[in-house]
Length: 155
Image 1: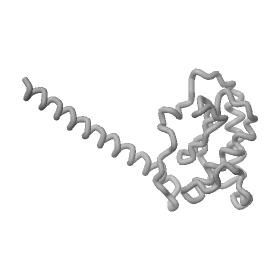
Image 2: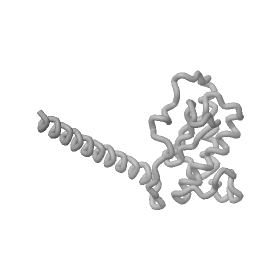
Image 3: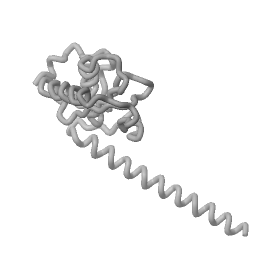
Image 4: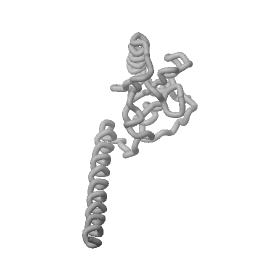
């Protein structure tokens, strides 16, 4: 009986290690594909939060007109500044109750469904995190946005 138990534990350990290696390989490939979208300045950096926490909340009610307005604002900003192609905006629950969060490596902006600050102001700030990342594959500007050289990014 003891041999069977030891064998079972070793088998489960082997299976767990194989599964972990498989998940890591899939994640690594996914990260490479995301970063490869903006060559040649690609840097493989994972997003700050796992994708499960980025899923827009279905619990918070958001006015469809507000969603459309946010998308329109981002569309207008994309016509003004470089590096904003394909940026999306969603509403949901943000980490630590922030007004909004930019998942810059993916070009996604998540706005809190309960935000207090005007959408124009929120999005005018968050787009700069995306521009900062897409410009050279790293974040250089911190939270003091837009940067002093913002005119360099006009289309």
